[in-house]
Amino acid sequence: MKHFIIFGPPGAGKGTQAKLMVDKYNLRHVSTGDLLRGEIAKQTELGKKAKELIEAGNLVPDEMVVAMIKSEIANHPDVTGFIFDGFPRTTAQAEILDDMLTKLGKKVDSVISIIVDDDLVKERIKHRAMLENRRDDMQDEVITNRIATYHKKTEPIIGYYKKQNKYHEIDGAGTIEDIFKEVCALIDNL
Ligand code: ADP
Image 1 (cartoon, rainbow, N blue to C red):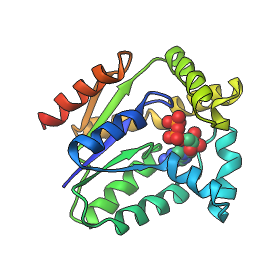
Image 2: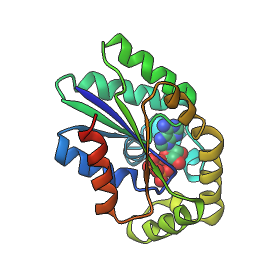
Image 3: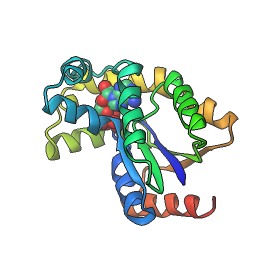
């Protein structure tokens, strides 16, 4: 059983690569963004709380996403592995994930980081806004806040996984196919 984290700024293409990984390596994809949008669509209590935060470009509280991740793991004991997408997004979440997996006798095997600069991130998010109807992709101030939040709260996680020798970078400026080739080379060499 292997556990991967696909890491990178908003709009880096994490979800796209995660889906390709699922098909090739038979992993279960867990996207906290997708789970949160599901809660919003179902208008659950959690969804109502998350909606405003997401639409302002802020993170939702750690305990909310941790609860969702816990039930995903508990509900799928037989999978060959997980690919976590959009989680962890804070060092606290990374520590909690380690605790959770350790208790189950499991671990994070590798963190695959897609490197994309801020200008390309903005371009990609704007392009996605035309394809998907995501409110957090539509306004410049919200996109700017998401990028700032990434640098402030999410980027420090890099150091956390570097210390564990699990952190690997891939240039995210190429095509979907180019990036996936690098992702596969990395996984196949583990
Ligand atoms: P993107 O990769 O474009 O930022 P996501 O779909 O991964 O999009 O996330 C959308 C939003 O959901 C984030 O901007 C944030 O508000 C919220 N979110 C997703 N994952 C987390 C998380 N692990 N912790 C806190 N908030 C999260």
